[in-house]
Length: 66
Image (cartoon, rainbow, N blue to C red; front, side, top):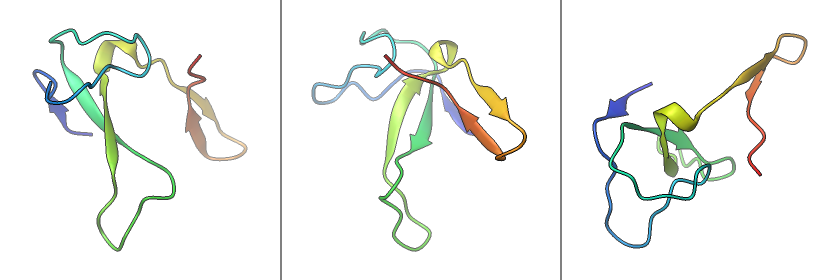
């Protein structure tokens, strides 16, 4: 997973987890249903906001976002 030192703050972007525009390290997370060949739309999310769980039985990484 590639990280970026600061988010792209163009537009009205806010981290979907903490709802802030803080200039902290971010990662791009692909959006389900947007893949077109080798391209996929992605959302930038603060790295320190991510708290993933792993369901080994389903091979699924996830985080519930409120």
